[in-house]
Length: 143
Image (cartoon, rainbow, N blue to C red; front, side, top):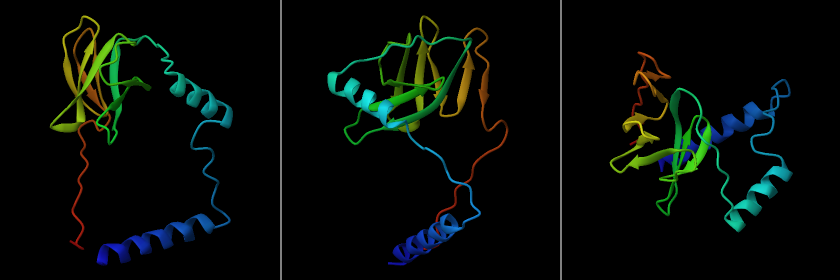
């Protein structure tokens, strides 16, 4: 029950913050209505756009796994369905670690990347958005 009370506290804080008249508007979070309609038509007609991956580096920007088990992987800022090859890159989400994918750019050797990590295709040098930092998550005391 304590977690429900905490959720209500957080919601109240969010409402109070957004009700502040001096706060700047968030702006549009999603596409325009026209672009959303075009995307919906593409989805209904199963039209797949192809965007070949360009550049010397491959960045794993994000992974979303649906309840159906299908995944979408963002490479260099562009989404692609897991194991689709329309970009010339194969990306398969690691079954035991949903924040990691095995990325195979074209004929290059496969590389296991964490979300936020990039690899130079020629030198195989890796970079990470965290650099030498880290993110620490502590469990809630309510549990």
